[in-house]
Image (cartoon, rainbow, N blue to C red; front, side, top):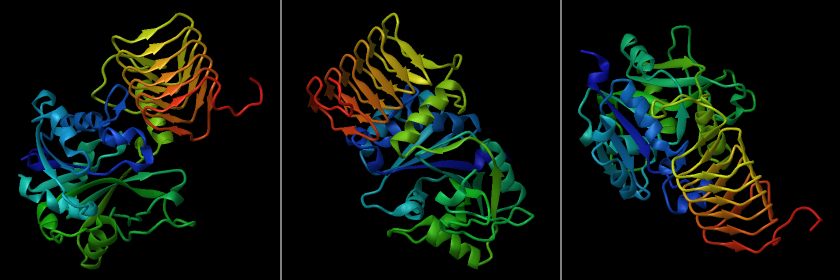
Length: 359
């Protein structure tokens, strides 16, 4: 029997998304629009494309939003179950918490805020061919110092789990996707917080369990920060990051139906213009993410920034590397730079915030 048919997908989407505030005050991070679709929808499409049909979402923060949007999963060709954590259980505890909903002999576990392009079927093949207890997706990165490293031997067997270090012995990092045999999940302690990275994996190594790595150099990005969120969205628009959920040609911008873009506006860098959004004449959008209903007035510049639902950027304003909350109103000629965050509903008067001395 094909391993896809005996494998459930588990997606952990319980985080509060604090690094993406104020956007996540109203919606959980996996539901934020990314290339015009909830971020989670790109992952669910990849899961379906790999032949896995049963998905369990481990939710916590704003749990009801997921079920309201995805329902039973039938519109995506999936069967989706939901398990809600009443108190934070960590990665290992979150996996153990969904055990009653699992149907198969294996579970493929995903971190709900990673945008990836790896071949999920290839990871499952590695798991089956090695008869592994756990298989980890490991991705090679240029600078592994910011991540936990996972060295493997010549056979692909994991030899250690190393915390962040200034002198990593390998460029292989934990990419946040695992395949577990069901009996391994059954052994995770129930009803208390458990870290899969700090507790489950090291104890399995100590027991000489069969832990293998599936190593590749596929597209991979943790979407936790505004900078990474903007880049990941742009990579989807431009076709650098793959997604079966997107059809049509890739390009410099993605303008959704019902949006209005005036003549002379420049849209580049993987910009997304949401449904009902408006872009004025002469505006310049470079790597911008406009949620539905956002307005960018004439002559304004928005670079590498996220503009929340229904927010307005006034004429000739400059927004660069910033996050503008839902319904905020940024006055004409304002300048918001270098990590500025404007909370929902806040109004800045014309010229009210500047970095330059001219008026």
